[in-house]
Length: 105
Image 1 (cartoon, rainbow, N blue to C red):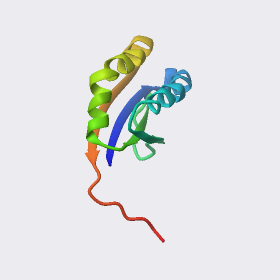
Image 2: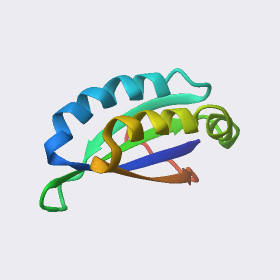
Image 3: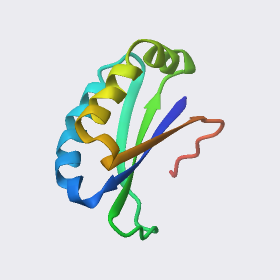
Image 4: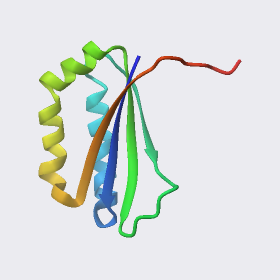
C-alpha cells in the first residue's frame, strides 16, 4: 500500500472557498485507478497567523498506480488549484510505502 500525502498551507481569507473547491477535487482524485480512500485532516498543533494547515491523505494500492497518476493526471489536477487560488495556497507532497499495518481487535 502507498500513502500519498498532500500538505496544504491556505490563507485564511480564502479558506472557505478553498475547502468548498477541495471536496470535489478529492472526489475526482478518487476516480483514478488505484486510489482506495482519502482523508482530509486539519492540523491543530500549529499556529500560523493568517494561515490554516490541512493534509489530504490518499491510500493507493501500489506505486504503479501512483506513478500512472503522476504521468497522466497530476499536472492538470495541480494546475486547477494553482490557477484558481494562486499563491493563496501552497502545497507540498510526500509519498510513503506502508511497511506494517496493525489493527486493533
